[in-house]
Length: 350
Image (cartoon, rainbow, N blue to C red; front, side):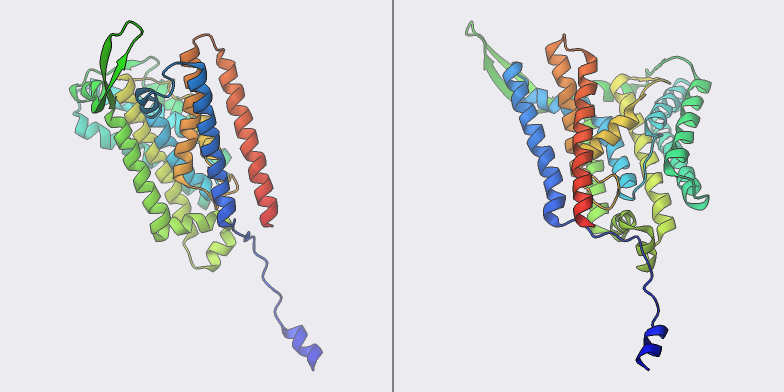
């Protein structure tokens, strides 16, 4: 009788659900990034005067505002275990579409939604391909990257200057924050304004919205669950299809917005802009502690990752003679370090 009952007992259904990281493991990744960023700032302040002045630190945000937005969109995708190689090309397409429409006399309040629609629409199509045709995200987004870059060159093969009054005002706008007083060796006192740009405020607003969506909404919880395992997400009754398509739409939307911010920054539309930015965005997300396997990470960590990359490029600007190759070497070493750290954490949770 006992044997019969044992034979009728259904076999456990295998799932690919992984044990979540402990709170200490999650915070240890961001903690490592914070420690690294502080060390790099301290080293920079020792090597170069004014490296950590208020304006220099704020410049890290203003010079990387579009990369912050790209990294936020990439964080949504990587949290689900995916990847998006098209964001740099979509950002460039956004700059070209904006510059072309503005040159044709379209008003800025119309151009900006059109650019966002183009970016979000491309992301939506990529999400559809990945989910309904079971195409690997690497392949689908690689195709989208070639598509977007090709459209840029079809529209124009050279940079287009933007003379629209709104874009020009955003290019020149400074938001004064506070004043600093410095005295040089000759005893002369100089008062300087510390300022930021509207693009930084837009990027930080997107960061806050992304944080709220990921941590205080059902959709955000589904994003994390999808990164933990698609089968387990289905078993919990959460919508895999809608979430998977939505994260690529968000990534495309962020890439379109990054194109707008890049146009504010350069006052131009450039078909070759953003080459390699998809790799910078991925590197920032990884350095910020988001697992490439998905299921764990924070958009605040991605912000720290962008600032870390910004400090590396600041070394080159302050030094003047530093070979560009060394900045790439430093980024490569950091990405390898954090990937190894992630592998160690993943092994411990199995």
